[in-house]
Image (cartoon, rainbow, N blue to C red; front, side):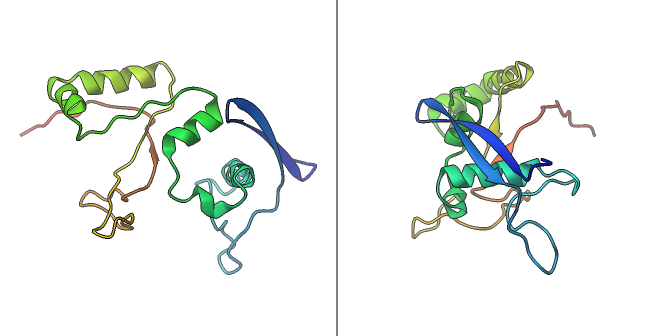
Length: 154
């Protein structure tokens, strides 16, 4: 990044597209933190840069809010996306007999990108902006990095 710009490649509409961005990131003047995505380590800068490039690809940052996780994963990887609804009868059956967790664990073992979200809408049909009882933010994408078996102990 010595030159003050970065080039990112996305798979959009069936073709690889290159996006050039400068390294200036919108930030909060009082906290000096980036306004949007950021890395846990303040010395790392790739997350706000890839987000800036992805926002440029879509013409503005606001378009990224509430987007579709599967589309984003395809755009950054060039792969394919598959979606499971945990409330669907097919997935419920897989959950009950343990096949679903074995499937997801297998995807992770093979190096696939795996994400999840708890999509919730209010009576007005708009996405709810709050957290559930376990702290999971509704309508927020989470990347799944690994799965570990937890056993209950008395």
